Image (cartoon, rainbow, N blue to C red):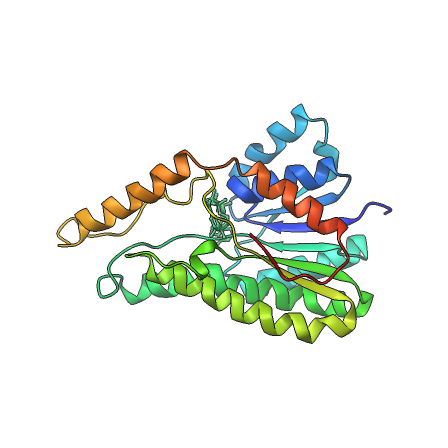
Length: 246
Ligand code: NDP
């Protein structure tokens, strides 16, 4: 295949969806990885409108499943023989007071945002090293350098992504593979609108909700996620090893 190949996790909504469409418009063959195949219409409908549906391949991947990530990566290698950009985008936000977020939720936060990136990256690394080129774009957040109350699990998971990416960057530079961090501010997506596990009896419930609605207000007035998609297209054209983009 002549087209460059991109792999995007969490492609069913928000920034992942916008990035999938932007890369397909740019001429990439995009493998849009989603955990729930029932959501594929969210991608295929707008793609059809833009007449780019033939450039999008839907693939099922829950990033918290390392074995599945390996299977999918091997399939990509067998089918396409190349991977030009890996975009580790899937993420969730678990809000709450530190002592009230139960350990299962703490783990879920890290399992998705941090280990999800480790699993998917690990699965694709053998082929990236073999082809000696490519980009890995990891979705961090402005939260990694600007904390806010009741968001400790999310903020900590994004800081972990930063440390991972910093080291990986130096490990892969000699192989011609560039690791990039994106640290978005506020974009209008579903991330803060999803269900949370805060107990109705929590003394901090009102505070958590105030912060969530404050962040949400920002996010409602915030930028269109397509801006991040376009930024990723621009980054994909740069072969200079710059690390951070806000
Ligand atoms: P959305 O909630 O719209 O998108 C999150 C995506 O991640 C969805 O496609 C969701 O799938 C997917 N996802 C969640 N868990 C998993 C999983 N276990 N396996 C596979 N996919 C999963 O939010 P955003 O677009 O905002 O979030 C995308 C990334 O951008 C996240 O990493 C987020 O932290 C980051 N970010 C967003 C900012 C913003 O202002 N919006 C700011 C800074 C960073 P499903 O539809 O099935 O739930």
